[in-house]
Image (tube, rainbow, N blue to C red; front, top):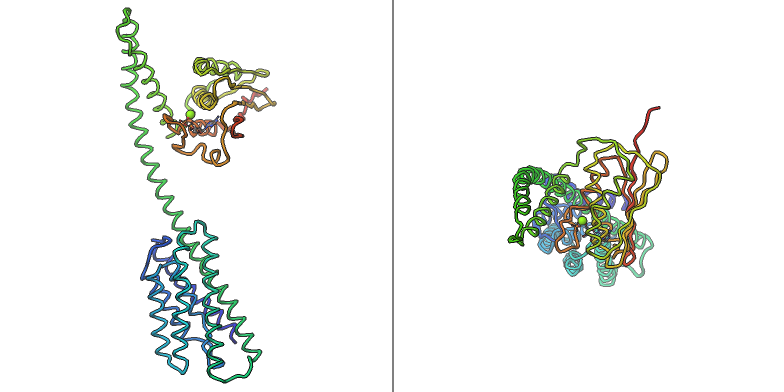
Length: 420
Ligand code: ADP
Ligand code: MG
């Protein structure tokens, strides 16, 4: 039966992909490879050797490996398969030898013409679509060659219905085979990419730990220098050292970057304290009021019924301050930033709403990833640290934003549970 034979061929043409993904992990789209060519060339030849013979023709899936090798192994891969097919065809011989050569060359031309397009396709599905299209092409070529051969050989006056049935089955299985093989290729490439990503993030992790230990060591001398500079400023009655405030503010900045970094490396809740959230928020807002005033922004704070939390107060302050700072920085003059708190039984919701520039969906998706910043002097750490801290506290953060209108950050935290 032709179907059985062709389905067997589908299995044969899938084999090199599995072999390649099992033993080799250097998968990349667009990298020319003789090796892929050799594997697929072998299966192409196998298909031909175990072809289904009928109507004096060989029915096999030899062109699926040709298409795949050209697309995934580049021009070189395709040429190797073409050579293998031509050699096997020569070995098989027969009276349609010239037609066999002709159809091989024509079938190879199609995928070779689209390989550049294929390499440029960004998504997996686009590539699979190209592969299916490339799988259709040899089917048409074979059809054309078949008609020519029949016309030349004068064997049939009209096409027998069985031959039509063969052609249809053959076309369908060829296209399905190419699509399925392309999907397998893509899966193996995806697996490889995932592995790479894991290696990379492990490397980043070690780097992060190293940086954290350095940051920790740098913080101590920095504190000492800052202390002495503050003493100098206090002694400097004549105001000779006009640059001292600038030096101090830069030191503050360095300190805050370091503490952000340390928190990023390991947000741990060290000292648990019990405190009232409303007062805590008012303190945080007061801390940032000078910054808001300087920018000409109204920063206000509204609190609901008192609610008590038990968590690391300093960490929470850092998280909230980071978020309010971002809101202030995103808001133009005469805008407003509103910090409010509502309690829902055992839960408290802190809301930071600004009337700033807002974020697009793409920006929102990137928010909170390492080093993502749109500011010239930004570090891209603040949001990530804040989210990490709130997460460590068992809280939840939800952003909603509209470009040009503003951003709302909602933070849900669990209140302290009293056992009565
Ligand atoms: P940084 O403040 O150093 O840039 P963050 O991690 O704190 O780093 O913020 C990352 C980016 O997210 C900012 O550069 C900004 O583009 C965007 N962002 C954060 N909060 C807001 C907000 N409230 N409104 C608009 N954009 C924001
Ligand atoms: Mg920030």
